[in-house]
Length: 336
Image (tube, rainbow, N blue to C red; front, side, top):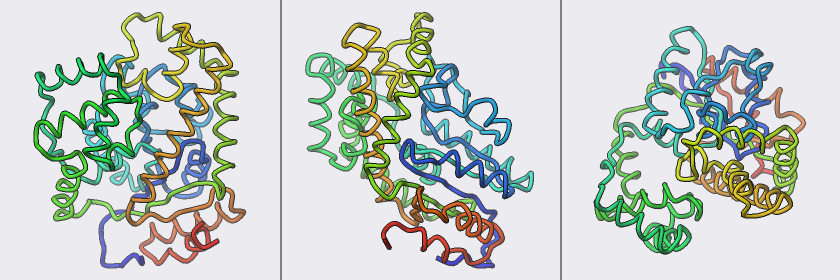
């Protein structure tokens, strides 16, 4: 699409992509060469003390390109998509008021959905229904309940890992409460939001390597590097607090769950490596599946030799309210 001059909304950029796709490097380049400021869209990086396993930017990187919405919660606390929406909108307003362009970077689909969908139409948790579902979870296991969800709401089941009890139970709970699937409720919310345009005009970029095998190799290398950098020791320190457990969203994050189970003695180091890599690849697959359904997304090849100059050129044009699509089309993997 072409940006229309008469659209007077301020610009904002979304940079989406599966884990290990190279989003951070591209985002830093945008910050250093354009007038942008980063807002993290990552459900693990919001937690303090979870640095290695979440691939949180190090101090040197943060000095070059400060990130908002990292380290905003203790791992024992919850951080919902609604919390993210509130905090992200506040950060976007502050960045825009300072004369900069918000650059939202990350792969947590629920956060992006919540940001654009408006105020939630989802009912609060029902204690009686939740107690019943938790009893079934204990008796049957999460994969069995996920299979039930897949029969009711296949679209949600595709986006939720079979090992994610929190989101699986919530989706089942919503159906029992309302008679509508999570997908139907989200669609209703989205339609309501469309009646009130988002306060920013958006350039939405989706970054991925040309070949899935390249992404798989990067995922394997990164997980093994995390182990070398001290991921096991990081989880050991979290366990010593005695107020964290695998029932918390923070400890169910990919990598952390597998290391926790390894420290419980469920499997050895070789199996930890295999499980950590497999879980990360599954996460990347879900992220790519979601991205394919995301509207108005410009796909970019992370290993294209012209990625950086052409993306910078397009982003600068977009921020200025000018036509920007030409260079992005040249980076689109569907055209190769």
